Image (cartoon, rainbow, N blue to C red; front, side):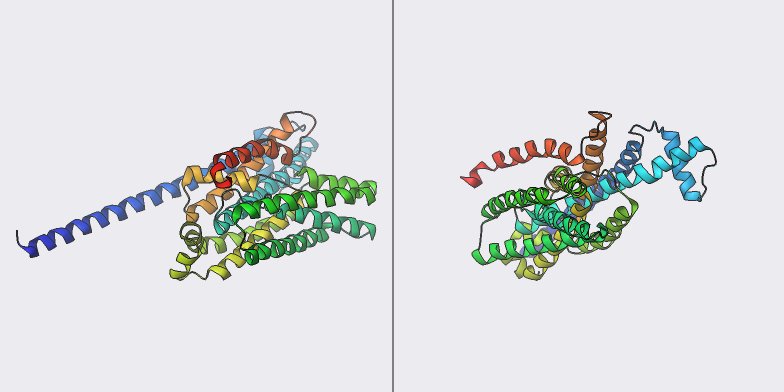
Amino acid sequence: MSATALDDAETATIAEIERGLSTAGRRRGLGKVLVLTGSLVVTLVVTLLTLQIGAGGVTAPAVVDALVARATGTVPADAQELRLFTTVWELRMPRAGLALLGGAALAIAGVLFQGLLRNPLVSPFTLGIAPAAAFGAALALLFVQGQGASSGGALVVGALVSGLLYAAVVLGLAGVKRMQPTTLILLGIALTQLFTALTAGLQYIANEETLAAIVRWTWGTVNGAVWYQVTTLAVLLVVVVPYVQWRSAAVNAIAFAGDDAARSLGVPVGRVRVELIVVAVLVTAVTISFTGIIGFVGLVGPHIARLVIGADHRFLLPFSALVGGLLLVVADAVGRVVLAPAVVPAGIVDALVGAPVFLYLILARKRSFG
């Protein structure tokens, strides 16, 4: 066979392989889209099912009737139906919505931290950002209630300012000192204890009302959720999710190839890292200001998502949001059932599940610590 014929055959073979790889890639992408779609449906169905859980005796038809009444703008005339409508729409829907959106926000933050810092043990909690934000919220609560002012906006501002300052100091210090990811986690754990102690210290100078509110941060709960909290998180995620999806290819480059290789691919590594860390701190701080410390959703959610859908951040980010939301919704539902009629805060249930998973991750990476 002539050299020209061999070259033609080689070219044809390469083209066939490329077509096969392209087809396989499209099939995998389609499969992941189907997984995302199915997971979205499951998450919404489970969230609606949890609306039946509680002491009010709400059935599935009553939930549907309440949602239809709200959608059509009608108010039930019957006293019993009105009670069920109020229970579903004013008590349980905000609770489920805050759990769903809060879990999604914390999971997105966890994925961003893990990808940008290239360490699967990183999360808003293990870095100390969540406890710092909770301390800021508790400090704001102590101040505004001492002045007799409304605490709603102050909690968000306090958590946001504290979380951003903490992230700037710790991550800036890590960059200057060129800390290894393991060292950064250990620093986060140490500072977590510091902010936990500071938050506990505020309880000694608080009155009974403020003390009860501060204790709420240490538990982490969606009890007492109201619609403005759900709306705030929904608006925030509507802005954040498209942005992080747009940056997902850059996160892939940083997470898989490293900073130098990512720069060679044209990724502005420094700017992307700062922007996305600010986004992660923002969604963490706002969520924490509403729910208190929810420790392990931002760690466990991304790992579960990664096992199911892979490490490509184009799919990992939205799927982690669904998993995180579902985890917190289920944790809240379990907390309402396990010791009924008492309610176990979702943060406690989350920690009971998340702590063993975190321990497993540490043991699985023991060589990296040795």
